[in-house]
Length: 611
Image 1 (cartoon, rainbow, N blue to C red):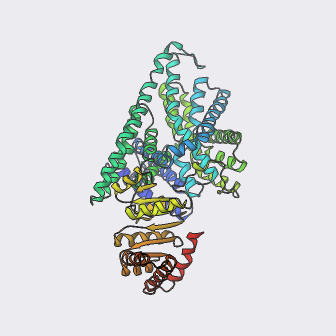
Image 2: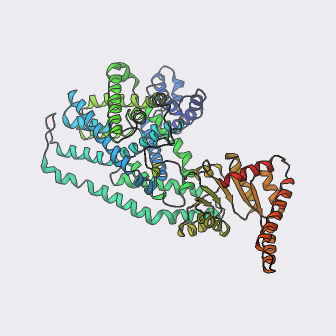
Image 3: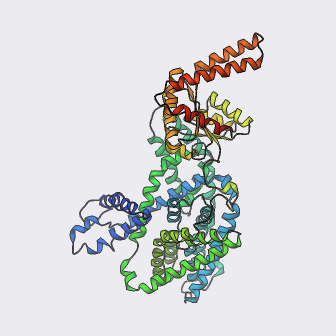
């Protein structure tokens, strides 16, 4: 990133990090979307902001991002990371459950908006082929902006959030076919054809061959992903278990995202589609949650680069030169597209207010508009001057997404998230409501899980030993790889909706860490932990467990029970005696705690598990 300000090749990176560390926190404090913060930073720090004044005020060159192309190249990784995370969240089973919305509502939206926008551009004097390219490009919305904005407002798990996500997914799946269609249109238009577009059917056959690399690329991605991903992460997890560090997992995750994206590009597809496929494949493995944690910081930072790149692309001089046309185009295509999306949503039987929110937030253009319209310019089938004005209008419309989300939330303030119009399997949480979370899936954890299933109690298990996880999954158990002592991992495992947490590990120090993490995020959840001995049980009660089960005490009680039964004492008397002694031990352990309120809290919590 060479710049003219004399700051060296890393100056653009320093300027971006400064924006991320100063401007975005300022927007957060003002309760303004950080997405707008990054967009504003791009405008301010780009060549049309401080860069324009650098000639008269030389020191401003130090605050300018001068290499916009480098920023845009890096921002493409941000979109790929976002699509990878979406793939991880989806999984094939959830994609199958959402097929009605993705392949029904989503593809309907793409087709209807393409035809509607294309027709309007033809009425504005654009030839058929140019209007078709413009319509296809603007039919897509911005996954990179919409999803973070909805997440900030807590709308992801609502009905409108899920319908929005389904449409965005359909749009992302449409990018590759649209780009191939643009290539077809370019191949089928004769050299020197009239503006109306004269087609040459003799080149249709050769053009069809452009599909072959894409199809082969997708097939190879699926095949290699199936064969390579699980062994790769299992090897890395074993190395991590030997104490070789979290960085290896991060490196493997980055390799998968970037590698799959580059492989897709080599096949003529979008980088984000390759990352989505990799995410879908990893979603079926036990490593999906650990990978999510490893990727999250990079996704956020690289998406910030993307937003800055969008801001840099806004040519303020061109907007000021003809504001009526630019803002008029932006308003026209946003409102027309929103109206068409609303009609499609209603046709697919979504509720009125849900359709309104979905339509408003998806009305603006998306990042792939620049890719598709740029391809149209390169292929010579889009009007250069008009297309550049449309691209400016598309940028303006992307800036309006947080505002559209605010308007939508005000209009649908009374919409309930609890009763979705979608299939239950299409919901976005990573764990089912009311599950029991088992931490540690060795012999004890596996037995707890078996007994829970016997009584129709669902569970999700997490363990940091890849061999234990592999064995559990081979037996059909719902178990994942990860460290439950991390609050972020607990969140991904559904701690927010868990009915109870059972900690079964045999390492006292690790049990303490998990108990502390659980209580930090869910002070109210039923928490039962395995203890090494009486002292450890007392310590666990002081940390807030509902019940602590010391190994030595339970072994003694079991021996006594078996002895009494073998001696002929009636089973009812034996069980009563054992339960009375167990309660006495529990009282002793609780009284050894410094916190006198904890015993009462533990007894109150214990009753919730029986509901």
